[in-house]
Image 1 (cartoon, rainbow, N blue to C red):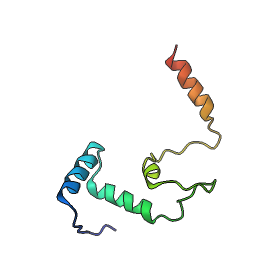
Image 2: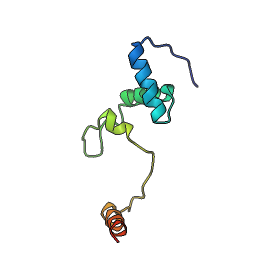
Image 3: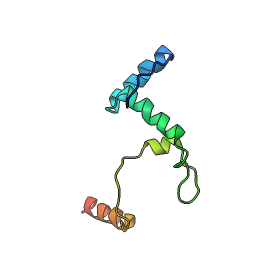
Image 4: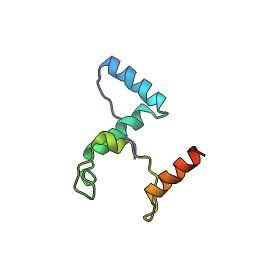
Length: 85
């Protein structure tokens, strides 16, 4: 359920944030909501290795799920072979 929220921010910050959101084809509301979710999401702050993942890195997620048997090295090798044919 969506609820309206009023924030009081510096005018320049708002303008730059709107430009940023627009350039990334997102609404400012969506941008703020995503950032706040990252801040409050305590369960996913550490990876399986116990290494803390910064909010910035987490914001780069694309939502793409790779198969468990995906071979990154093979995919990269195939990409390079195709690129330099």
